[in-house]
Image (cartoon, rainbow, N blue to C red):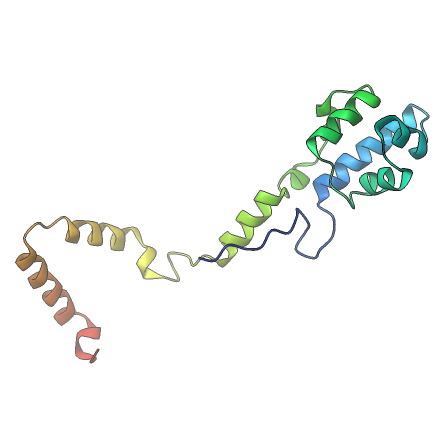
Length: 153
């Protein structure tokens, strides 16, 4: 299976990740509660007000070290930025989105008989037969009994 190219945490449509938007909105909430302008907060942590603006919109992702700086500047624990996050937003982390898209691409046991428990147990038991001659006779029997045995390979 080919790995998907990293999307830098964006949604499949290319928009900002909802978790980044939530963190940015918590940042904006705390900044306004403290009466700080974007420019003043930027000065406190060595950023331009435009960068603060992008963080608050979720357009740019906040690194761990920057989040640590923000928590100190805004006098809140790092966990503050993740407080009150809705369950559906929590399920949209980049790794969860990749898992979901991979799961959507995987065939189900109903659609692919090779994925059924019975098939897996049959194959496991077949390969546990030590005698290659017995294994070959079972293979020939299964082939003869199947509809595919009549079809030329």
